[in-house]
Image 1 (cartoon, rainbow, N blue to C red):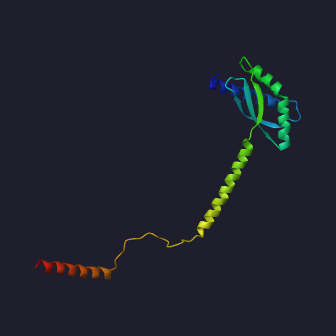
Image 2: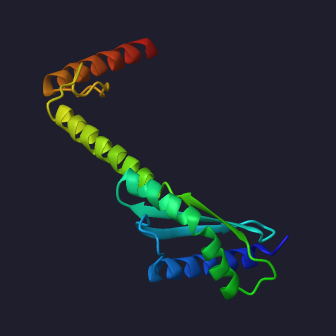
Image 3: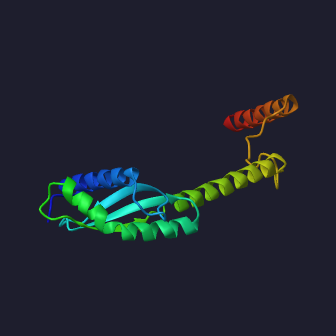
Length: 165
């Protein structure tokens, strides 16, 4: 088993080699606009999975997949000439689902924004189900209440003074 750092370096190198070769062109009319997004190499450096995206329709994606499958041997030879490994890894091309996932995430974010807008609009016209401020507050006495308490306090003091005599 190879060092993970070495496997990552080899994967990066394979990605560059394949991208440059595809940039120069492959003589296949089925080949569409291909972008190599990632390469993953197994721990023993024997197999490489090349992830790619294709700009275009579903038909162009299937045609490009067929073109890449047909060009796998030529691309593997190109990789073998440009890396310094004893064995050239086998190549497997896999369509990357990043664009579809990104579109799905964008649709979810758009839906969330619409729901937030609807909730904000509802909240602007909302009313309280009960009192606006449901918490009990301490009683505040008015001036009349203060005089009544002063009279009551004086009566209690008088009773205490009568009992003390």
